[in-house]
Length: 484
Ligand code: BES
Ligand code: MN
Ligand code: ZN
Image: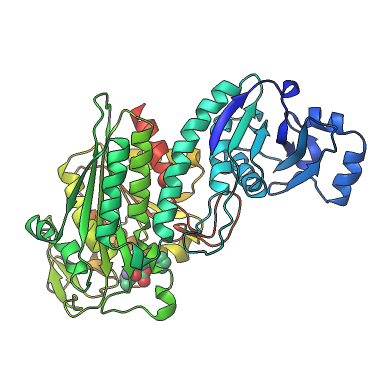
């Protein structure tokens, strides 16, 4: 799909025009023009259809030749409009307009920072479907989203940025939605190589031998019980004009059975999602490079299954991740922190300005914040503020949680430097405290637990049920901010 520009409203024509309407049918830009031409019956019709202009409402009005567009989409924005509600409204429009080839719109004329980008992002993401395995596919047929008006050229250029971001989110969603039998670590690593080749990012892939020789004891331990061998993917995007250096570490458990600490069946149903952190890194690296942002990015994704095969780690085993600290593995289902330990050590060695890790790490975080908000931990207040600001701009919600030093004893081990579990209470905090042990002293670090929002529970606005690609947009916004 393309995002394009065309001239002022009264010179345009086409299949459909989409215009914003605020609460209580307060006409937004372009809606007054359209309503005036449709005439008095419109109000009666809107009464009949119960259309008031709430966020989430999109009404297709047949224009009967009174407008040079066959259909008029009235897009509800509610009151108290911000960039995120505009993005969501555009998502609802994208769903409703899935059978329309050409959609002209004035939605970008709503007076907000980043309006055009939000509209294009919402619209494109709202049309996302995962239908790889459906015999009968019903793809969206929209070919162009066309910004109309004097400012259309500028809007279309913001639309280009939005398209790169939406492509990256769709990539992450596709990877997450793919079943585990189609995304073995080697398959994902090969995919990473193709992404790198497409956008000009160097990709290094470590197989089992190198994982061992590089002393990645966390990844090695988790992978022992799996038939499919592990990989570690490193993306290096190093533009000549880079002004900052960001490292990203994403949890890539392509399937989490729990290992010998086996999950009950219901708990496994969605565990193909457990590589959402890695998927977010794949997507973010692709978008940052495609946009040519002047920032150096190192992306690290340990990829493995967590399975209970004959070679599997046993509860009580002691392993040694890359930085040499020893870990007593009391619960093999707390595997994410083990592979991240190696990822964080590798990232620390590169001495970036900031490390951000992303992981579907704990059920406890999902209990605390629900399915639509991620948890954020940081060892540095400036870094936390930066990531929270980027997330707010991107329209993704994160809530900062504490890293209390006196809780560190929760993960004291009788035999090793630490254990990989703690008490049930504060489970997401205990996990974050564990990760902190693998971040070098003085290294700024932010941890994002996306166990909840990595999988969206329902179809709504620009989200679709299933893999959400959460954090891709935050990471791109963060890279933009850091690049200055
Ligand atoms: N991948 C899970 C966390 C998870 C659970 C993500 C539900 C999304 C939805 C993680 O590997 C895990 O199993 N964590 C355990 C940790 C516990 C054993 C300390 C958990 O949260 O129960
Ligand atoms: Mn687990
Ligand atoms: Zn897991």
